[in-house]
Length: 193
Image (cartoon, rainbow, N blue to C red):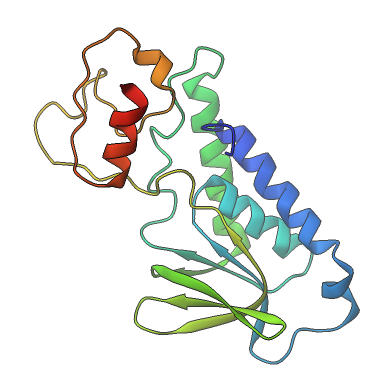
């Protein structure tokens, strides 16, 4: 998503491609992982993250997905409103991916990843609470904002209310109110100015 918000199909393709790249690494294939070490930890349980985990599983890699909240929780409404992407095709892709994830019985940890550290030739994903997962590779697929905060007020579900800013140019010449006082809100206000 380096160039902006990806479609769900693009997110799935990128996760699959990353898994294939990691699975092809000679270092992973030349020797087994040390005891207690995973081949891959995926941080983020959205479309790209689960696509990467499924690709790793198909390649025979030991993999865990770390997700701060319910899997796929930030996916509905994720893709910007685009005329070239049918909402029905996104819903079908999401249903297909959910079924594939359930069938694969991927290991999932509901926890917040606090940081990734280098530990000699390995990586450590430190979770809230202090637990750490040792891995040979880590993929971070948290998207552009994780699960956006909601105010829980009447009207926030209306079509003109957005919880992410995808392209400031879409709102050029319009009166806009940015709600929030954190870094994301400040960056949105600057981009809209």
